[in-house]
Image (cartoon, rainbow, N blue to C red; front, side, top):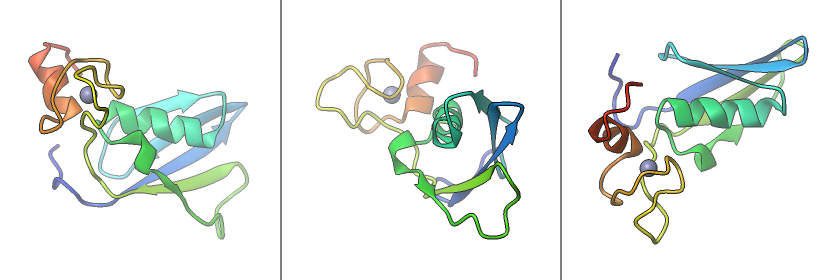
Length: 110
Ligand SMILES: [Zn+2]
């Protein structure tokens, strides 16, 4: 299930009885959130190792009620803060190591 390093990803969010459920094309992971569609999309982005700040909301034209769509450039999250402590994943790693790699090194089973 390895995609290209930077292929754009579409995240679709659907509302179901007060819960927003986010899915991304090419990924099996889903994320749910009751706060709002953007939060659900960000939560999913974190789950699959993408930089959550790079999500962009798309036009809702043609989408059903309660549906939102977001795109992400596909850039993997890395430590973009100026300190060793990564604000994305909470692990101390460098800018050149992605959060996915840091988590793998940490032994966290995804
Ligand atoms: Zn990180």
